[in-house]
Structure formats: structure tokens, C-alpha cells
Image 1 (tube, rainbow, N blue to C red):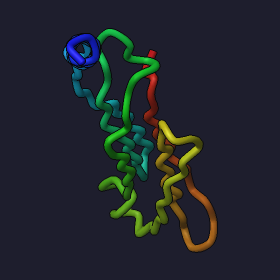
Image 2 (cartoon, rainbow, N blue to C red):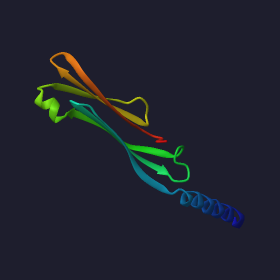
Image 3 (tube, rainbow, N blue to C red):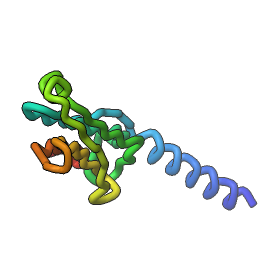
Image 4 (cartoon, helix red, strand yellow):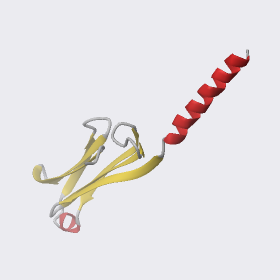
Length: 116
């Protein structure tokens, strides 16, 4: 019985050592694209292990937005914005500026991990 308790205690100490060895940090990866008439913004939040940042991480959020610049508003243009999720670790934010049904410009911003 004493041997079993000693083995279990040893495993507990080893497991606590592994848990303590993981040091977490957070960061944000952003991208911004602006044309003459529109803009796009993409952002992701990342929680990562400082010792293994490219293999032990978690994407905490993904945001994409866009709109018209002052010049685009003054010109009377409209826009539509949408986000693409090419994989589980990134976001692509796309803003298309329109004059009626004619595409004037497209602004694209992409943020992803790993950021190298």
C-alpha cells in the first residue's frame, strides 16, 4: 500500500511539474488595408505557450470589419463587407466598394497564426 501511495504521489509531482512548465502569453495579430475609397481590418487574438508557440496555442477570437473612407463617402459610393475563414487560425476581411453595380476597388486584410 505504501508503495502504491508513493508511486501515485510521484506521478502527481511529475504532472504538476509539466503543468508548471507551460507559461502562457497572449498576443494580437492585426492587418489593415486601405485604398482610396475603402478599408478593411482583420484581427485575431492568440494565447500561446512561450516555449512552443507554433504548436501549443489557441485562437481566442477573430474579428474582421471594413467600410468607406471619407473620399468613398464623399463620392457617394456604397460597399459591402464580408469575412472569410480560410482555416481555423486566420481571418480574411474583404471590403468591396461599389458605384452602383460597378466594382470600384477591393480592400483585403488577412491576420493569421503562426505569425512569422
